[in-house]
Image (cartoon, rainbow, N blue to C red; front, side):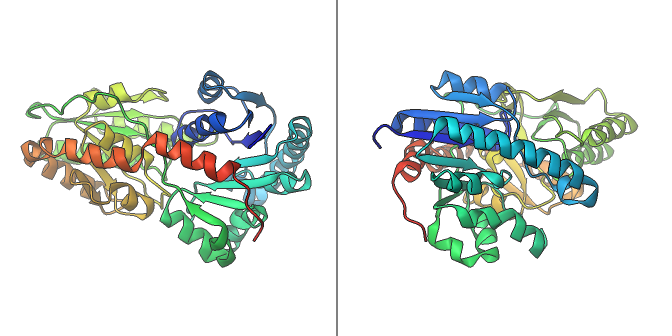
Length: 381
């Protein structure tokens, strides 16, 4: 593109899965467009990383569609934040006058409409796969996609959920597997786990992500006389603080406080993976993809993941990945026992798993593909 400006809208400024994917998208766009402006609702680790990679960052009010806002008790907040977010978005669009508006996630429903009103070409990147939601909820969530000129989707699972709601969106959708950077030189797994498995959980602290299941699995192992430690890396969304407190209560009740540690949010997870023997991804509900699972594989660690939705795609064909029944601490515990019994075999397979994941989720390939799809003209369907 010549003299091009791309405006990017994203709903947060942390460095969880979709935030890291957004950073790779922007890195690719910075190489292809003359100007890339990213609008975020607050400062944070992501805003710092974006500036370091050549993007401008604008911070201001944003309307982010959370599930709590769709309940009657949240309608007041919905109207208030919707109005403030719309005004701020309209202003940013007016100041930047982008040729292309790139909207990251379907949780920013006002942006596609406002982008079209400002005559920008709209590209929507769908990271969500809400298969368990009701028909009305999915109609609301995916409705803004009808206004997009082009839609990028992070997995076949997410695409199937979206197009089951609005079949005509298939004609403008393109599946682009997430970029997942890994450590440049991951350490080899320990030679033996005779002193107990070192287990790691990385992710949001919420019922959906299921950190409590791993806590319960460690308790079950303890009841069998099997030693294990657990590091929990992650923090809550606003409003989920009671869940974190319930985790602390469960840890105290199980008398495992010396072996289970909550570390809060950490922008660099590689040190934790380096010290871990196994990463557990115990999501109770559908996941559009499994970035965290791929990160574990890239770190040369075996992964135990729920046998559901996008996690199946993330672990497909990986010899060092276990899939377990969702919402089952017992299934996680059984997989951990099996892993320990097969440890020597698993150690010999982690490099093959890592190479396979690195090829599938190359950041360089992802960055180039996103830049191509976002900046190339695309007619309305």
